[in-house]
Each structure stands twice: as C-alpha cells, then as structure tokens.
Image (tube, rainbow, N blue to C red; front, side, top):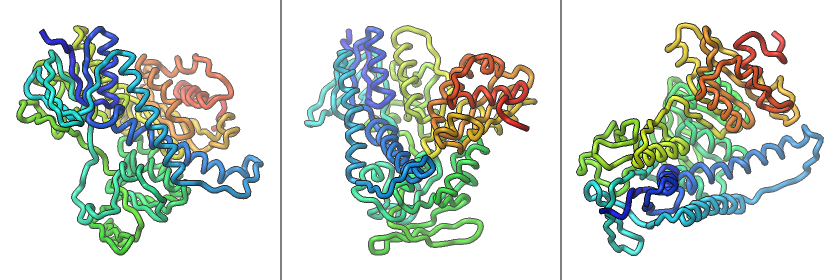
Length: 464
C-alpha cells in the first residue's frame, strides 16, 4: 500500500492549493517544486507586477495632485528601491505559502519531478539526489513558459521577456512592447508611469482580444491619450542591435518603418510547459500544445491528473487553483466537475479592466435578443470624489428574462467590483435582483446597480 495519496508536481497556484485541499480532505500529499513556492504567479507574475502597478498608480496620482488642491513642487523616485520592494512582497508571499505547507503537514521537495510510470514519480532534488515516490495519484501542475515567436533578432541581448522586465536594474528611456494582450498592456502602464516612452505593437486589429470590443477600444483611447503609442495590425519583422539600442522593423497596412528603442519586451503570451515530464512517452493525450483533461481534471491515463496552465483552458491563477481543488476532490471520492462558464478576467491596466461572462459580440451570436446597458463613472459620486471619472460599467442581459449574460468594467477598482458580477452570473441572477439589492452609497459599486437599472428601465442618476 502506498503511503502517499497524491504527488503534485509544481508548486504554483494550481499545485500548492491542490496540496492544501488534499490535506483538508485527509489525504497525504507531497508537493514537488523545482524553484520557489507560488510558481510564476507569486514570484514572476501576478504579485510582483501588482506591486509595480501600485507604484505606477501612486506616481500617476502625484502627477495629478494639483487637481486635488495639493501642491507637490518636487518629487523623485528610486527605481532600484521600487524593484527591491517588489522583491520583498514576492518573497513574503512565497514564504507564506511555505508556512501553509508546514501548517498542513505537507512534505515539500525542492527538485525536478518526473513521472516514470503511473503511480511512480522520480524526483531529483537540488543536491542531485534521486528519490522515488510511489503514489495512487499524480497531479501535473508544471505551469507555462513564455511563448517564443519566430522574429529575427529576438535572441539579442537586451530583448527581454516578462521575467527580464521584472529584473531590470535601471529604467530605459524607450521601450517597444511586442504584444497588446494582458501582459503587454499592464507593463505599458507601469513603465509609462515611470517616464519611459512606450510603444505597443499588436499584430491583431485591436488590443486585449478576449475583452469586450467596446471596452478594449475605450481603454486604447485612454492609453493613447496618456502618451502610450499603440500600433495595431502591425507585425514585427526583425530586431537589429545598434550599439546600446535596437532598431525594430515593423510592417503594417501603411508600409514598413524602423523604430529605435533602448529595450524590447516580448509579451506575446505563454504556452504549456511540462517541465521534465515526457508526456508522449507516458501516452498522455494532448490537445494542441496542452494536456487534454475531462471535467474532473483527469488525463486519459488512470491516476494522472493535470491542472493549471498545462491544460491550456484559461491561463489564470484563480482558474488553476479551482482546477487543483476539483482534481483533489475527485481523488478523495467526491463527484465534482470543473465549470469554466463563469470566470472573472482582470487586466491591471491604468485604469483597470475586468469582465465576466459573454462579451456583447458573443451574446449577439448566441442569443436572438439581448439588452445592453452602460453607466459611466463620470456620473458616480465616489468616482468624482476619487478623481477617477474615466470608465464605465456595461451589462449584457437576456431580453426576455433580464438574466445577466455578461458584466464588463473599465475604471478604478474594476478588479474588485467584478466579484459582484461573478456571483450574479453564478447564481443566474437577473437585472431586477441586482437592482433590488441595496448598494451602499457613495460607492463605485453603485455603477453596477445603475447599469442594471438600465436593463429594466432607465438608470436613476443618468439623463437621456
């Protein structure tokens, strides 16, 4: 009989959460992580970038201090100190995960994990020693890596990815960001706030493709007004090194141009990374570049599960965590299915974007009749008091039942406000139910209630 109920390879948001849930369910788990606990999210993604977003927001507020009657005659910032604070926050979070492992009596092995066969995991620890772990169940949670795209010159020193951007020792004067997705747009806001001249190059017709088109276009307008250059329908053909700078060849419908820059940041997305696991040798079925799983997070090999970015469904930390919980609950004997219908998506741009459910384009394809209601931040008292009037709330609902189909927010604290929409869609709530829920005044949350009023009639605080 095996002593270990489940071996988890990968200590990111999918893996470590699965380990904790296993402990809660009385299962004996071992967690294998080759680097730092928390994975990319805690160490080189979500958390450190949010620390820099916090700095960027404060810098933007300082630049607008005069609007609030505050005279800031002179201020400066220390970039190495900013980066040190970011590191400290990431280390604190990773250390916190370590404490959770100890508190739940979960054995953590720092090393590279490999599946020799179903039920057998080989670990080579940091000292080079091998250990075999026999277990009934294995969860692959090895995450993802930066997607490399075939651009001549991408290998030049000074062309960085998100890891490199988080490790800069000094600020460049100019930066070209390849990719107008979530990662690219977040870094654009961060570096622009710190005085860097930023250009975003996106191959598609618009930025943030998964986001509702109207919301994405409005954000693009705001970012351009802030001074961020956005080139859509544009392809990077090559990168040339010239002394300390680069010349980036870009082609678009208007022709070709060479832009000079000090740094090039590749932010074209991520792809599943299986680490040291030979999935093909094991016979694990793939779906494109990702591991194919069912709704219980099971692969086609009995006893082997996969969660997080390796399954390629929705590459978000909170999705990975939920997938980890679903996998472990099924291992424990429960019957639980993973549901992707209601997943909040947040972009920590300046201002923020958050969405859940169907976009307007998706809803029009799926439903015969829909209603769309919008309410601007400009008409909200709290937003006015904060000086955060850029933005809007957009609700999409079924015409017949007024059931919410999608909620999209552009503006301050969008990532916090989206929780109401996520719960509403999970409960299949109607616009009437949102309206009949008393929202505190004065708060930004009132914008959601007002937008819901627009589905069933007219917003209270908006003239037509």
